[in-house]
Amino acid sequence: MDFIAKCTKCNQTLNIDPTEKKVNCPYCDTPYVFERTDFSSDMSDEAKVKNEIIKKYDVKLVTLKEKFRKLSAKKQEMERQLRRKPFLFFGRKGWNKLKEDYILVKDLTQILKEEIARLEKIKQKMIGVTDMTMYT
Picture 1 (cartoon, helix red, strand yellow):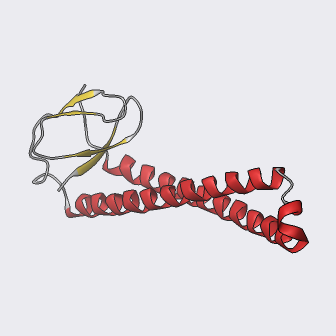
Picture 2 (tube, rainbow, N blue to C red; picture 1 turned 120 degrees about the vertical axis):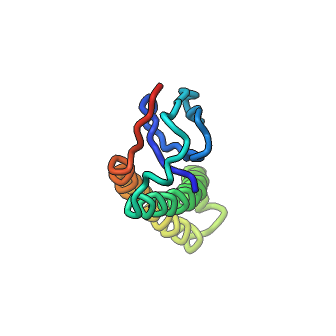
């Protein structure tokens, strides 16, 4: 079972294999050395549950970020279409539909952005509670 910790340099989440003694942050390459390699015997049941919850948040965040990326791309494409004056190509009905769809995509993008921020905040609070001691 991997453990979750926070990099002290870039503040990113680290998934740590308890059998590893040395780990480098995948984001900033900061090396970490642990006091010992057997964390599982010292972890309380509550900490284990929190680690599992954090992993679930990670999965949900990855999914939401992917959806956000796709919606943002769709939004940018719609903005390009609206700037090109598509009324000439789509007619009044098509133009109005494009504007309505754009507003919907824009609103959904904002909702996803807020949800991602909310989940990251919750996850960071949980990591703060379960943060493991690391030595650089």
